[in-house]
Amino acid sequence: MCGHSGPVQTQQGKRPRRVLLTGWFSFRDREATAGDVLALRRVEDVLRGTGIPYDVAWSPRFRPEALHLDRLWPEDYSHLVFVCGPLHGPQVEELHQRFAHCVRIAVGTSVIDPGSPAVTGFHRVLPRDGPDSEPVEDLAARAPEVPARPVVGVILAHGQHEYGQLRRHGQVAEEVTRWLASKDCGRLELETRLDTHDWHLSATPAQLQSVLARLDLVVTDRLHGLVIALRVGTPVLAVDPVAGGAKLTAQARACGWPALVPAEQLDVRQLDRWWDWCLTGGRVTARQIRDGFREGSVPDSADRLVEALARPVPG
Image (cartoon, rainbow, N blue to C red):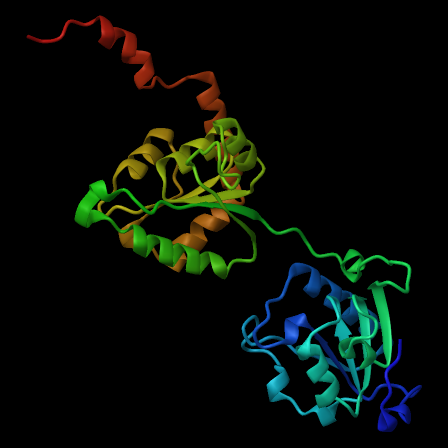
């Protein structure tokens, strides 16, 4: 598949002066996907191995601090490479117009219509799939390996109006989620509410426990977020959303769990401190508490229920 542009043909075969890497992750109103970025990393890895200089154009929506298409000089580049995704639409076609002087190559892309201007505008297309070629593995498959990040479940309450003016739930949710956005981790939003019709939610406690048991950490302002995570031995960073402390603080004390931040003391320093502890020594403590639950070494209210049922009601 090859387009035609007179001035560009004279550059064919020469070592690139500088390459601009683009993709759907480059357009102003587009989002980046994990697959897009991994495919980009694979291409970057290859270019670094050859010593070819390059820049990456990012969507300002995704990387506001990075290089953007509308803030660069096309003349600075001899080649444009479009990485991953489908080749179609006016945004891709505009790249051909703006970078008409460049050698334009698409790599790891899907070709839907080989005759569309978005496709024919490239001098070379190295597709991952298309009607005229055998499919090849996606570029993301061989992207450089990255170290595993902690996987964190997030369980936040948005109700509990019974606490009236002592409620700090909105403030806690805003500060905790803003802080979590800055942490290098995999985040998974969860609910303790069960539902047999909504696939987003667990239908049984066993389903929720199975998720929590596979996490490295749970961040929560809910009592049962704390208890059920500890029940499976997963460390918990708990934040009490009620001024002065309420049932979550009481439960952390009853369980012997120290990683609790009161709403009045909620700040990055406290959150970071307990984050570090939960991912190190907190693992051992959480398993010890889990084992204590299983052994039933500490009486709970149910242990005293039979006695209460048998006791006469005061007249």
